[in-house]
Image (cartoon, rainbow, N blue to C red):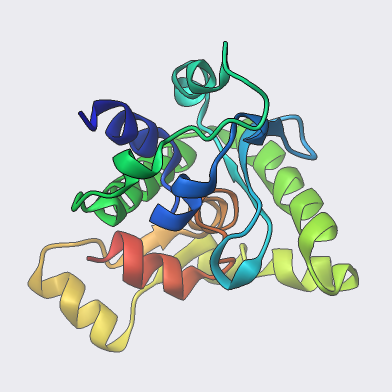
Length: 190
C-alpha cells in the first residue's frame, strides 16, 4: 500500500508535511538546471528546492507524468500512516553525501559554483557569498567533530570527520538547513 510513497521518499527525502502538500506542479529545475522538487512551504514556512541525484531523476519524474495539473502526488489516506519517513530522509542524506564525496575535482568545482549560485538566489544577504563559501576550505576541507559529537561518533564507530563540500551540498541541496552542525548531528552522526 505504501510502496510508492516509500520509493519516492527514498529518492527525495523531504519532511512528512512537505510530502503531503506536493502536487504535479512541483517537479522543477533550479537555477543551475538541476531537476528538483519544489517545496512551497517547508519548515519555518520557507520555500525550498530539493535537488535530485542523477540516479533518482527518472524514478521521481514518473510520479509527475500523466496526471492532472495541481493534483496531489499522495492522497490524504496514504499520508495517514505510521511509517518513519524521517529515517528515509536520514538515509537519503547519507546517500547524497556519499555521491558528492565521491566526485572528482572537475565536478567538485561545478558543485562550488552551484552552491554560490544557490546562495545568491536564496540568501538574505547575497553579498556575503564569498565569506560563506570560504568555510568550505577551512581545516583542509574537512569538518572535524568535537566534544559530545566526537564522543558519540567514537562510541558508535562513526566517522570523526567529513568532507566539507559534500556535507554542505547535502545541507543546502537536500535538507535546506545550510549548516554543517545540523546536518552532521541530525543526519550523519546518528
